[in-house]
Length: 426
Image 1 (cartoon, rainbow, N blue to C red):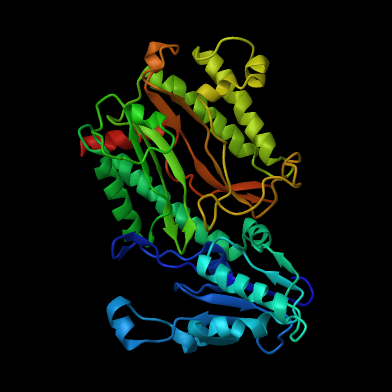
Image 2 (spheres, rainbow, N blue to C red):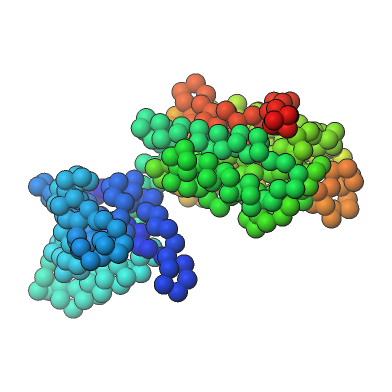
């Protein structure tokens, strides 16, 4: 933080689902990263100049009536005792305390447009100081968005974070194995979603880290398909993109496998192309290589695969230049992962997005190539129409390469078939 600066970091609020019901509360990731405090409607103040209390929490006070209705609160005492704040106060005091916190400071670290009520409190104070500044200390003249800083912090995982991500990856992987053992023709996509989420929670996850994608047949060609309400048909593939959230850290796995437990020849041909790209891009995810270099590698390999399958015609370099591959591969080969499934951190080393970021130890990323051939695509060979395949793992970059957090769930087609055939014999 700059000299003579102060940071104000708000927690998340509960969000109305409909009428008088709320979505399940999920803490703001930056606030959680910095504080570990799990409750809504709180504010953290980080003040390096305050030697006695550089870290203060403003929280909801204990309230027997509200706790009877909505659950226990840590309160002011708990914020200090359990969550290690130097000082804590009721959130109701924050607006009145804000002037003395900000008076005379040169720099305020604050993220606008995430908490409208707090935005208005801060803007009201700043605008009021325009007419009072002769009589009172100057307010901060510089406001810095702290998400750039917290993003860089969150990008490089600590050893403790890696351990939490290993658990999230393990639970996610076991849930996918569970699905492979249970899926059969005639089931509904919703049943698969339900059994996976129940399994994850039974193993200690708080729930899913994002809305699960359970796409059978042609539904697998829709990248973010979340209806999850179709019947699974014999002979179709099932694409499952689902992950567990463990102590707010995300798992993110995709596997594609045959509903009846046996790949057709056409399905194998497409699958083998995607699997080869996954393996090579996973190997590429290591220090010395870059984010954009990996993306370009995936494009080159998948374009060659599309030519081999007859999905595209021409020279690979010309097709890449024209971005013809985007007809069947239209997304990135991976993203950062951590407290958010699409986690914080910049992908380029400059503002102009010209210099791609090199991989460094502690970075956590997904690897997820795919090919999507809609059933109504008359230009594709008939045998491939309606096939959508994505395969995805989560990796942590190390000094010498990477650790695959989700390798436990099979992706080799023979291993998938062997696992599913055991299921059918039971």
